Image (cartoon, rainbow, N blue to C red; front, side, top):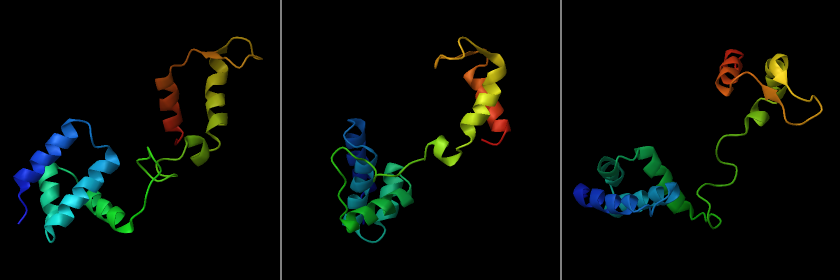
Length: 129
């Protein structure tokens, strides 16, 4: 039977000191869960507040034996793609929004606009971006 109070205390000590990054938390929780066997994932999730899927992902990482490069938290390629990759036409759309209110030398790479970033973001969102 898993001692959830002890798990919670170990987690509090490690996470409170900033010792664990995202991957470290996942792997630590997976190791704790595996050490208790059946029901360990649920016990660690209740004790730490981590989602069971996070702990399962950690168990899979432990079992795969995959090593990441020094200083990496995620595998290369993980995370969101740049918006220019997912919506290559966004630069032209932004240009259309900014052009009427642009100030300064048209040949200069530095341009000024009277529209705020929030207004531009709202206008792009209205256009489906």
